Length: 165
Image 1: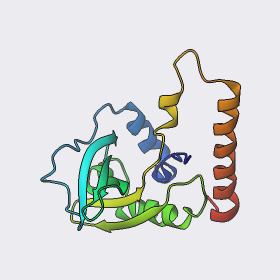
Image 2: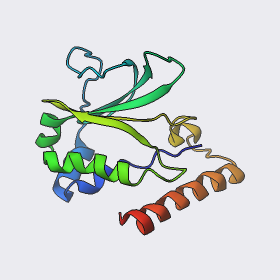
Image 3: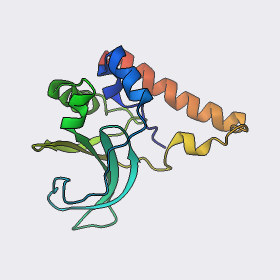
């Protein structure tokens, strides 16, 4: 099972921008296929996550629909409104690519940039989001919590020791 490591781009956000991000309740609309860049040999699926300036969609390869991936679309003009430069946004791809050699960190498959979007094709996290597995006000069994916690500690240790993050 892979963990979805917290978005590395958050480490690039200044404290002023961070408060704006947390206070913002608007999300980037990812359902407008016409505005998203086309990715050769990839068919986009449903939106599985979205935020203030990015969204994530499932996708599959045209030649083999059984190969499911996730594609993150970062809307560059929106990210600039939140205080991020194009260099900050590109830094996410560099960090994610450099640090995706660990078994608990999603692997970057491909990426590209268009006029308005940076897209990152990644390995799909089997099992979904960790927070969806935790029942509100109940939690999870201690064995399950220990399993996920060990994965998280291993991934964070790798990021600190091998990637200098």
